Length: 132
Image (cartoon, rainbow, N blue to C red; front, top):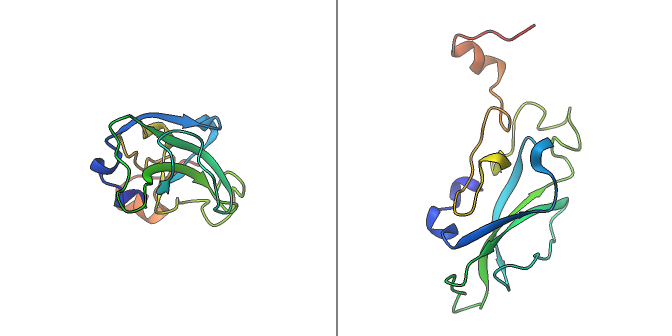
């Protein structure tokens, strides 16, 4: 989950590589994976597709125990909003979802109104009305 990623864990990122145009994506999921390299395209074993990944700088240290690097990956699953607009995430986003426009090297990224719009109840609680 993005909320579990600390700034310290991504401080050695020097670049984010996007494999798709993120302008049309309301959100992407982000996670930290243990990977054998600092910067090449990682293997992808989840359902769905890899959308992007982080490249680490030369100061990033591998784990002594496994020899792997913890790197951020960005992905979408088959049931996400980009594939099924009226599905499970029609009016919300997954817990690890972030707006890709808010992510940068060393910056976790966060939810926005685009990635996780408020519910009708939340809008009413804020004293706002929905457009017709």
